[in-house]
Length: 295
Image (cartoon, rainbow, N blue to C red; front, side, top):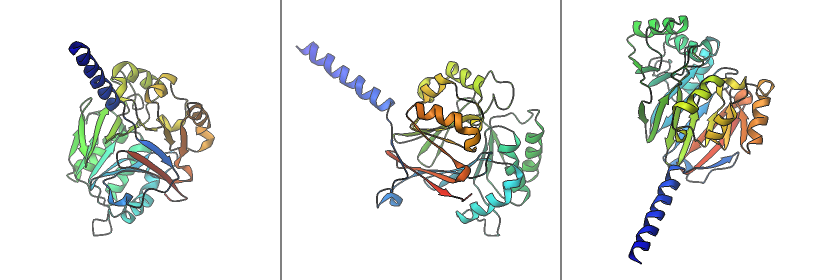
């Protein structure tokens, strides 16, 4: 009898551990959050309307990081958007504590380069690409940054950092050759809530990640559609992530196939082409809404 009780307790502990590992946050789209929502400790991701480029702002616990920056043509409008959000250095220029670039292509990095040239200040630039990586856009940006005394941190594979109360894990397909295949993915965890940002991880990279990383690192409530939804996602990759909501930085003209794929997976799909997307969570629930027309 005693042995049976011990077995039952052990089984219950295993179930509890499994439930914790697979914890998910409820996703609410276009719904009004509770009255005390703004008083809670929140993680927020703002997806700017810089179609078909990537530019996002991650906020948590009073700390901020900008993830990618679009091309230089969006620099001025992004600067104004960031100033409106409170990132004014006091002299009319932007101050953003951390800049993170997923890979050195113009539509992800050129905006940082231009905004720094325009006077934006920062405490740190983060990349997963070596400083001697032979890529013209990266070399232009790093020259600008080092010339202004901006510290540069090159990530290690599977490195973790915190932003407020959130934990960020960075990883990429180690077998990649070009910047898209080597795009740095970011898994963000906050309480039971999780998000996976994929840069431009194309199909080969998705296959590579399935073989390289534990699948629990891929599982997430929210997924950024890889490579601007230009190509359909690898089915096993989408299954591994199993998101409730997927967003894209492209127009529906290019993202329609991905939308169909996502909705066939019983998940919701959105694009920032028609306006800024805001995703907020208290670690238990997500509230997602869109501001039509706003960058």
